[in-house]
Length: 129
Image (cartoon, rainbow, N blue to C red; front, side):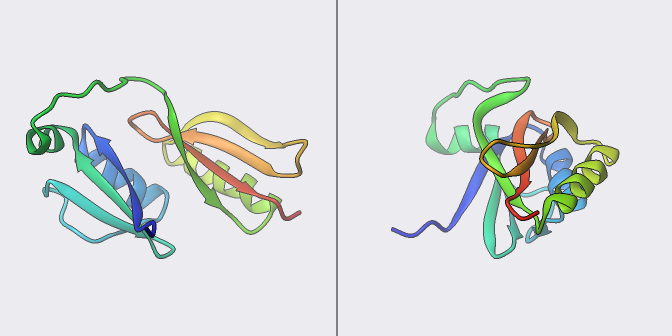
């Protein structure tokens, strides 16, 4: 099997599209009012799937957190330590929630964490000084 992409189930499609497209620079492949929206970032497929539509499709109900979500993270790499700091500053100014300010970890990575509007964790990091 080959990994084709990654998807998350969303409550508010328009808000999430705006965040991933306008704040993080993902390229949108569908209209905002569709059941699922394909975005692409650096050649990787990223799917936003409306929760209620997915539940209807599989005929099941699921539970969702309504605050910060520690179930997974999306990791975005940048070219160097200075780019981590710059990206963090830019996305916070555009409305991302700060989880961890840029920090150089003992294993040599400069990293920071933000959350999208529905509480999913996003790491921005680099191993290059």
